Structure formats: C-alpha cells, structure tokens
Length: 221
Image (cartoon, rainbow, N blue to C red; front, top):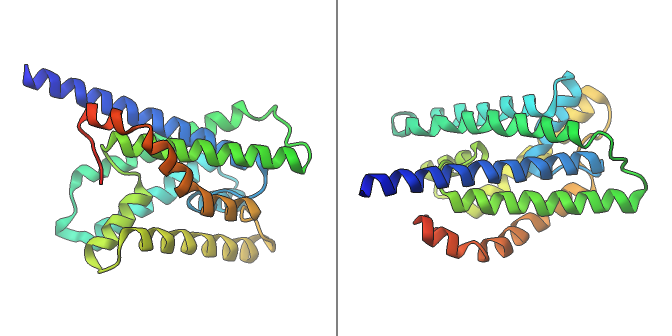
C-alpha cells in the first residue's frame, strides 16, 4: 500500500513538473513574440538561435545540455547521475517552446503597448511555471542545477549565484550579438523587467501552492 501511494505521489509530481515546463515554455514564447528581450536565462539560447538559424527550442536544449556538462565537470565523483534527467527536461522544454512559438505565429505584436502586454504575460507565465516546477521538487532545470553545483563547490549562496548566472548569460548574449550580428539581439527593456520581477512574481504564486506541496510531501524551505 505504501509503495502504491509512493508511485501515485511520484506520478503526480512528474505531471506537475511537466505542467510547469509547459507554462514556462508558453511564457518564453510570449516574451519572444513581444520582441522586447527575453528573460536572462533564455537570452543566450535566443541569440544563438538567431546566429545559427536553429530554432530557439533547439538552442535551449543545447545550452541546457552544456549546463549539465559543466555540472559534471564541477562535481566529478559527487555528481548524482539521476540529475542527467535534466537533459530530458531540457528536450521537453525546448520542444514545448517551439510548439508554442508556432501557435503564436499568427499573433501580431502590434504597437509598443501590445508588446509590453505580451512581455508582461511572458513574465507572469514564466514565474508561474517556475513556481509549479519548484512545487514538484523532482528534478531541477539545468540552469538551477548549475547554480546548485557551483554552490556545492564554493561558499557562494544560491541567491547570489543565481544573479551571477543571469548576469553572465546576459553579458554573453550581448557580446555574441555584437560579435556575430553587429547588433544587440534579444536583450532589451523586457530583459531588465524579467530580471527584476520574475523572482518576486514567482514568490507570490508559491504562496498559493503551499497546500499542494504539503499534499505531495515536497515542502521546500
């Protein structure tokens, strides 16, 4: 009976994780459609997609796989091979981004006000997706896993390291845009808004998921 309940909880957590990924992917697709810059974590996949001609979903898979490789290099023998599931998560996430991108193709960004509406929607959906993914507490995304790995081998705290990763990705995106395209690409005022608001909006959503986390036994500090 206990094993049956455990399997049910695992299935529920997996379903919750997939739902969170879908919500996040929709948010990323909205932010791309807004053309005001993507969130920091999506900035590098976006600019590399423009440079290479690959889809954003494909470059998201590639960048996240590199994050996993860096984790393995950092942790070496301490790396938990279960975390390789982060690559599977990246594949699903990337495919969802491309799917939602195709669905949103008929939507016209319109004027600047409409762009901001799409950008705001992107921030809200990405924040909600993050909250759902955290509530599932199954396998972290590759970006989050990289931050955790760095914290494991250094004295840095998670929050500070998360900010450092976001800044690094934005800097790399800006540099890549100017080097390969001769212009700024994928980093604009929407990127700044996402950097400032994503964490705060995610915290608001997380408050409403406390009961669900307790039910699933996935309470997080």
